[in-house]
Amino acid sequence: MEKLEGIERLTFEKATVDPFIGTFGIRSIFNFLWAVGGWITTVVLTLNGTVPLVAGIGLSVVFIQACYMPMHESVHHTPSGGRKTFAWIDRFIGETTGLVLCESFRGHVTTHLLHHTHANGERDPDVLNSAGNPGQIFGRVIAGAILYPLIPFIQIFPPLAKAIPPAIRERFAERDRIRGPEVAKASRWIALIHVTVLIAGTAAGFGTAVWLLWYIPAWIGRFWLSLVFGWLPHHPHKETGRYRDTRIFTFIGSTFLIRGHDYHLLHHLFPRVPHYKLRLLWKSLGKHLDAQGARIEGRAEAQIS
Image (cartoon, rainbow, N blue to C red):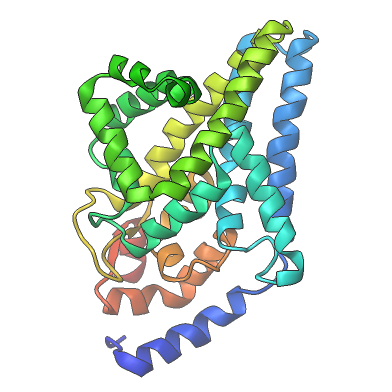
């Protein structure tokens, strides 16, 4: 297939992608229900002794990290199919899963769209979290998990920030500069809610639930999410441009593990396409992307050669 340019390229891509967008996201809603429902069920069964604690922690990690996909889809309005009448569904799913993931949905909308606009550039918020290697990402997650509960207290008593190592303070300041004041404000409010739940839950005798079945699994899940949605699709975070700032990278089992985002380039190009349709869209656009000079690696590269 020859490389297309200008209006010819736009027309071809629109005609190919249109059938994949705009439908009501029943599957996205189902993904929300099983992820949140599975986590709540795990907590209940672990607390009543039906499920062993170690198994409960592991299951909590699985279900909590699964909450990210419905939240991410809600940013792009795929649960509602882009219908304004059902926009409340996007907000409800996003806010609920954000609470579970220790994330402000309102803030995530802004930062995620900034990522799409400035992928791998100086204004990309994800570069701070996901560039480097898995060991560095793990260190950032550990630091985040430890420091996150301190956010409300630092707001009340700013000198507490001096207890944070200077390098981490500088990194947080850079993050806030990129994200903007509105995101920082939204994140502070959601952190206050989370810390209140942690303190109240512990005081009420539910320390196992709030710490071992929620907070710690949430941050383990965030490490996994940073790897498969932030690091893997964009590594080494060097290139920019429509077809080069992320990639198609497939391997055995990748679609299941990464829930369709082994075709992450397609998501950046056409964010309104639900994640569960990306693999099918690839079959229609693979040769076109190759002709456009896209990054295509792993098993996908062999499919078009």
